[in-house]
Image (cartoon, rainbow, N blue to C red; front, side):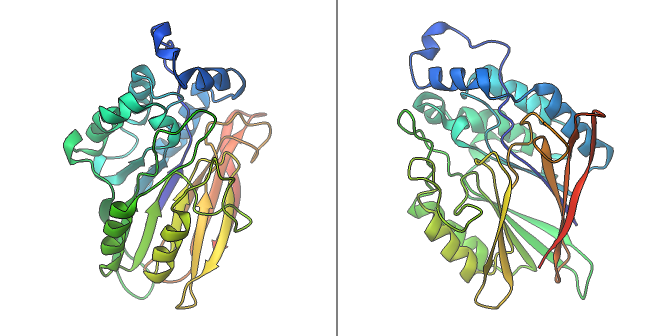
Length: 298
């Protein structure tokens, strides 16, 4: 089966809304939006490439929005609608989707995203577990796809994430069920490309606990975002097989050259054997989304 992965869309709304909405941490996000370039046209190019060859499943690992404004959530969901069927879509929130407390308390993210997933808002809870059939190789089987919510409102000038004991316990239960493959989706990476946690004000504060469960339960991939530069990091599970932590970067970061910004990932998974990763990205010289890299995750 083919699993596509986009992240960190940072969709901005048609306006910032009432100026009173900026009397909070949102003014930092509004300023960031002036120099962080995430054009909506680039998102459309990436999504058009997905529509031309739809994957079996699409994963979106957070930061749909820039400051959790209602207009941003609505615009992001309109863009994602119809790329794949609801049952073939997974979306987790990022820190920019939990930028301030009020929309988190009101579950604004769940209210907008749940219909895309074919769910009622109250049915979108974390972790969300999906079973996806996969075939090929020696035998058929199921992919256990577990979506986590690491997005919590944080103080000014911080962007850390947290899962919490209850979510980690439910994750462990979900991963204990038999599966041919296991993939975990989370916005905040448990480690960076060098194998170390991110800086304290940006890291996944439950990253070590998350990795421990993934290693013990035979997870194949932890797919994440948050860090706008993509990376891959390999760990060895107790059974000798690899656990890969893969960050897609920001799929809407303006491309300076092919492979430098504006990329997304496509994974080819069979019940056993290596996973193949294809990286695709916008070539600004042609305006087309092209193949950047193809590598076996061994």
